[in-house]
Image 1 (spheres, rainbow, N blue to C red):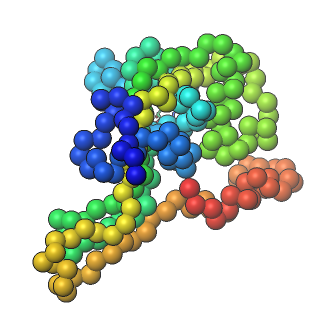
Image 2: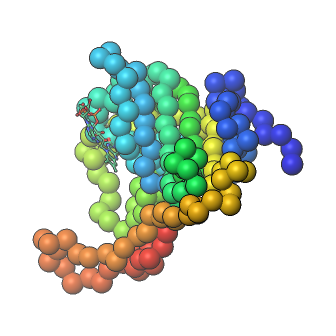
Length: 218
Ligand SMILES: Cc1cc2nc3c(=O)[nH]c(=O)nc-3n(C[C@H](O)[C@H](O)[C@H](O)COP(=O)(O)OP(=O)(O)OC[C@H]3O[C@@H](n4cnc5c(N)ncnc54)[C@H](O)[C@@H]3O)c2cc1C
């Protein structure tokens, strides 16, 4: 297998480098499977990391929030960092020292820029919305006021790394014949069955697109 090529020195995985993945398709697959990014910004009163929804296209990651959003407002025009993590399993070794987790994670670093152009902003909002659940076209159209109340940042996907661990525990050779159990406890994020809001007075069925998600794993 070819050696992975990191996009920059600062996104080069140093510890556990054999778990590094830099191929853009792998990074994008991990982003596509996720729902929440933890977004880190250097603010005047110290570093701040907050969970947020996100979306992406081929070259760019998009984040949105209220126009007055502190984190996004501070991040505009500055370097920020976004991470997405999936825990796939709890890896139970013969000694707690070798316990681990199976995971897929991505770190994206880059300059965040506010999207000003209205058409580009609406496009980014659709991407973020549809990334979580494909429903931009299922609700009321976004109004001019909605659009003005919303801040959207974009950051390039060019500087991204992924790290992946899969498989069994890695124990010491001398422990292998011992009496201790070793194995993996799987972990998954599963979508449940949709139910109507308590104040929903309509008579529409749950949209087919939502019903189709029931039982799927992210
Ligand atoms: C699953 C999930 C998805 C979200 N998606 C989005 C999104 O797409 N866009 C968006 O704008 N917001 C989202 N939020 C909310 C987001 O985390 C912030 O609370 C929100 O953006 C306000 O940011 P702010 O910088 O204006 O916060 P401020 O209100 O200025 O934050 C002040 C302080 O409040 C605390 N705080 C803020 N947010 C949180 C939090 N989530 N948990 C615990 N403490 C907190 C921190 O100590 C922070 O320093 C999401 C939250 C969750 C849990």
